[in-house]
Image 1 (cartoon, one colour):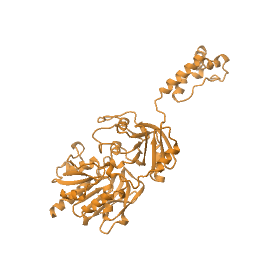
Image 2 (cartoon, helix red, strand yellow):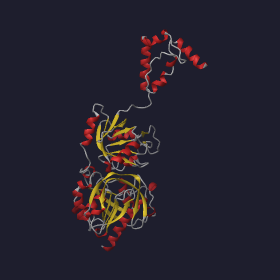
Image 3 (cartoon, helix red, strand yellow):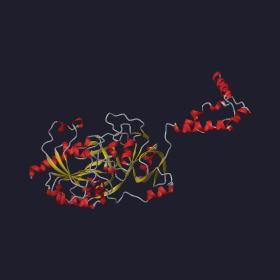
Image 4 (cartoon, helix red, strand yellow):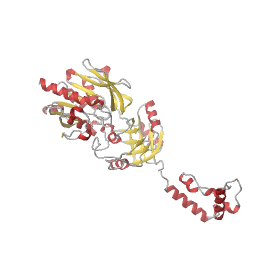
Length: 455
């Protein structure tokens, strides 16, 4: 009471009502700062005090304080929108590049590795919503890139970290997105967004920082686009063949066979680049492979002229049924050399076997998907990133479905012994993710060893 009375006396001396004392705090909360007409104890303020609001000097003071308070707010206003084809509008705070971008919205449940996810070429044509709420806290470093650039269209986060704390960091996530011309939107309720995508399936969305575009315009943009039927393999692939020999650096190596130096003799592998991740190349090299990487459209006849020990079909973005040239090349190689396919490579080889692919409701994106290896019953926790799957009912006799996704029962791996082929729908190289499935690379090495013995 004594403090309140003292504040009233100070306010009266300055001809300011006591309720205007905390005006700076209220301005920080985005509230207007009107001059009230009643005192803190319910007494009517005198006419002399209430008239202060109309005085020019007081008006200028209030306006000046409001401007300063607006500039001093510790948060940004919501200046970006995510508009989905179902008509829903999600308001957030822009970071990274400015502009308007369209893509298929998917959610990723990984708890770490946002840099590797952003640079995975398989996300071309998509926006990634991270279910992990806090993104950007370790910045961006030079070592964890899965390709030479960021391929996805935009990232959607709940909370963009204001601080970066990692000894390898070279720039913030915001700076990297600006450098790569990638849009980011923060302040989105990503849990609600994920629930919506699980209920309805993947939705096409538009992210924009352009306030001149109406919501209705953006909804129509989203409805007019689809990733189905789009060949994105040739878009993200290399343009010329190149050699790769660098394995996983010793600090990060985890495989006992590799660490013991027992990975065996060198094998020459030709790898089709449909959007290949760097860590796939590292794992193959760690297991004793010299790799020649070729473009997605490279003729099978030229690959066979190299007489490799094995042929690898990589991960990649888009619709596998939209790349018939890749399927044709696979058909020409099957049975002639041991082959191994991961993710998109699994889907391309599935079609080359004679099967068909279909689009999943909301895809598999994350580092915690359980897989059963049917021959032994072994369970693997896997890293996954795909929106399409092989329909096992369409596969010919002789193709064994070796792996099953325990979340939805979809085909996660195949072996076609007659054609010397093995495939995995998920990512044994992880990055990010668990290393349970790294054994797949050992199995591919085993196929090439067996082929060398019988040749």
